[in-house]
Image (spheres, rainbow, N blue to C red):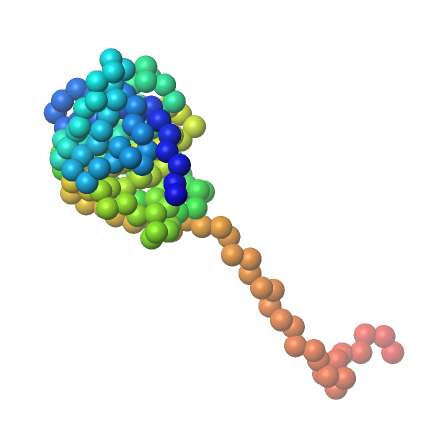
Length: 163
């Protein structure tokens, strides 16, 4: 049984204001929408078709910082699938998805943003918000290479160095 916790989120919606609040993971992610507890104490059920991005943030007052940090400056080093998501409105966002099919969610994608040390720790993007999703690369732990095996030389092939 998985544990649940209250997480601070900023829910960015298409053509509407951003909703700050708290979600109880994983219970808040329902088949028909996301339940968000606002700072005022009311619960809003937001349909996935209205949601563009759910940012799991450190502070609710930090604002929508995912817009400023949309792409990686260089090739990421975090293991996973490096993806580029293109939204219905033409915006795009890069991130790292877990390279584990068991962690795939039916409602959308949960990814590590290009700068997870900043305000955003994780980002959830509903599938309904996307027009395209591209895999840019597979990042992983380095696989150690086996050194080339040397074939032992026979006595007749061995060069004599000293007489």
